[in-house]
Image (cartoon, rainbow, N blue to C red; front, side):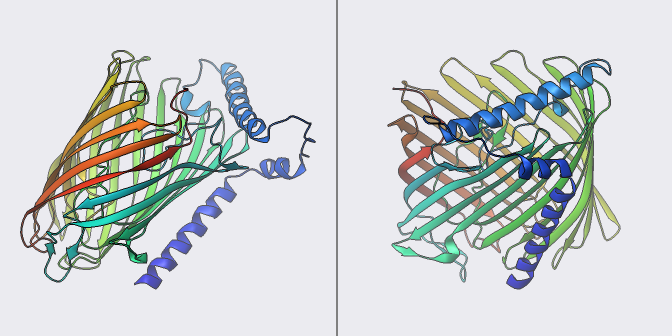
Length: 477
């Protein structure tokens, strides 16, 4: 099984590289190899020069494409007139294009690093009896985010992100407890109206060893959110998601997107499928009504194949979405639709959708996020829908001190048993320097159902504290 997974990842990586090569114009490679480097004058700063170069490439690309589009009629929407932001792995914010990090060599830099020491009663799981240990255990988490982000030309950007995590459990370094996350993103402007992007996300995580940092992460400026897994899985969960998106600007207000996609999942829970693969496509149309409002329609179709327990299932969904920003402080978005899954010639209908509300106060922020749809990405393999809601609030007590809290509930409509749970978490962070902070987390999670996973319902709590380093400055002192 391991050999098959390695073979799959190799072929997947080769496919991503080939796609990137095909979509890279020859002029971009020629420009990179033919352009001589300027001699460095005394007193120059290589880091500052690289930041200015990246900024100039992005600005020139936006200016050039804007001029081309203005001769064809109304101004084209920003989706194809500039390089869109790339999400940072595991967070709601975007990668920086200038002043990236003091730890940087060329296009490679360290985005963040952290150390956490955790103690709790839910850190040990007996896979033979399906019982979570009740005694206290300790774990140390070392995590960093490495980034390679480069503009090959004015119309091509490629980024790699790798986030390894090492776990020391009760003083012992065990290799099978380490987590790995990897993302690849490339974006290429084919014309002022058309663009294509390729994205691949790989994760290998052990969800029974969590640091208690369940707090929902959100960005009030862009509206992006990022929640973290909290349901227990007694084994490792591996997943890989590959997609390519073609965007076409139909008019200054309308964008048509076609996204073929493929995913693979693997775990080893008894009574559940241990591997699943799926392929399908997504077609969406979005219209910008004005600077504050937008609407859209999305259709998805996907075939999922399971190795056991569950029959192969064909999934379909049709939904409409709406987004409205009242002001710089309020952002509301939602979607509503219907989905159907067909297996063994039996069709089943369900309601799908989601909603998010983000409020930015003067010194605090609040977010409510709800999602209902077909589960993908773990920590279980199923062909049914899942529900999840998260509520988060944080406030700035002083220039350096920030506190926050978060609550969440998730329900997996799985076969043969449903599985549900909730969590509550609190976090505080105190900035020691503009880039270094001391943090402390307290988390509690409770789960029930899925007899093949847990022999009894049990609450688990975690407490963790440590130091984090962030490449993005949070202020001056």
